[in-house]
Length: 88
Figure 1 (cartoon, helix red, strand yellow):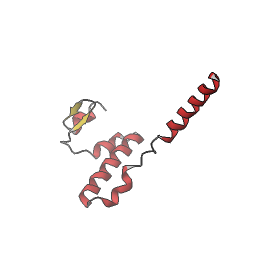
Figure 2 (cartoon, one colour; figure 1 turned 90 degrees about the horizontal axis):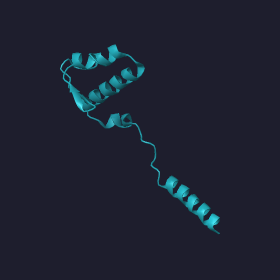
Figure 3 (cartoon, rainbow, N blue to C red; figure 1 turned 180 degrees about the vertical axis):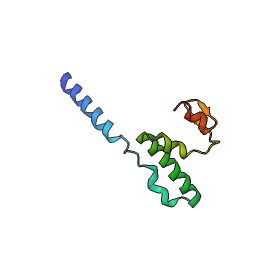
Figure 4 (cartoon, rainbow, N blue to C red; figure 1 turned 30 degrees about the vertical axis):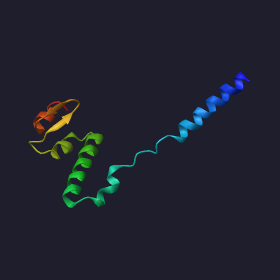
């Protein structure tokens, strides 16, 4: 009886865990058409920047940054494209 209750409890935990799981996140780019033209340009630039980084194309990624960009990451900030490029 004790073994049966343990098995039943474990089964309920598995069922409950999968029933409460979240659906996978949908990409943010799915809503680009609902953005204003200016916001769409910015979103496409951000997507291009991340795609260039993922492809290892540093030159293209840096070209998408303004010379006076402010990049905030990992608790610090780079205050220009040159500063960002100096250690990425």
